[in-house]
Length: 358
Image (cartoon, rainbow, N blue to C red; front, side):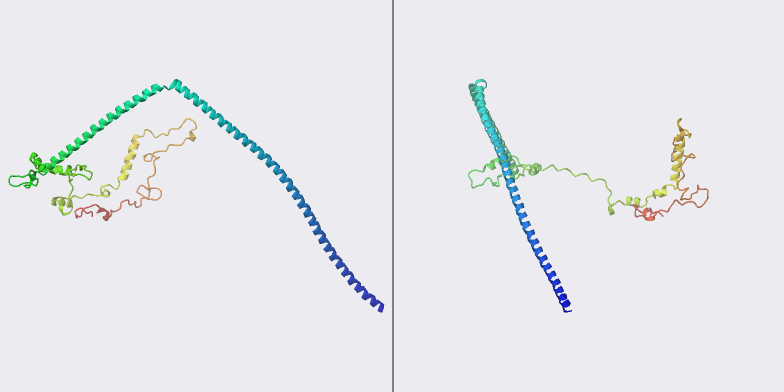
């Protein structure tokens, strides 16, 4: 009995030991697995990075070689272009020198004549001197004409002023303002006043309005001619200024009926009947013309609106919504006349009671 108990106790301890050792082994295995994974990842990363560094070095070598080749090709083309431009510039400069020498020789030999050109310039200078002399003479003539005109204007103005101020002339009884008794000789305006005639009233008024006014620059001012006012038309005076007979005639004038009163009520029907008679008189025949081919497809003739035949239109208001005297039933006819409005009848009428319409 004791042996079985001891074996049972040993068996339980053995099981616990077994599970403990298995747990420790599993932990060691997991630790070793993680370590192996880490080592593999580090090694593989090192290999990949080394491979990438090698690829980058190879790519840099390839790019360096290619870019160097492209740069040398571009440099060679630039050198060739610069050499070609330099050579063309040199050739153009040499061609310009050759053309300059040849054209100079050709013009001096065949076209240009030194002595003829010298003769031409000499004649041109002489002609310029003659033209300048004529222009100076013309300017002198114009200046003398302007001076003469100015002197004439001044004399005319002085003459007019003397005529205008003729009342200042000295008399035997009273000396004028230009003939002072304190002077040995009278003023020159005194002699001028003695030589001219006095200015009349009409002439002085016309001269004052036309020639007597000058502006700031000394130019005489002229006014536009004054047009006479148009005559006053024959208009009827308003208000209390009208003639008594005209007022009475307007007040007691005969009655003027309006269009509504003067026109007959049946004027529209009479005009329609007259149009029907006119159309019946002008129509030649009532037979409808049918074509020879396929007459069934022919559209019938549409008669006129105001015809008097059996094809005529129905009178307005006889069939649908109005009852008139033309219908078979003799009901009360439709009333077509309305009384006039008193307020409208007084529009544009006079104030007299004779013209009122009742």
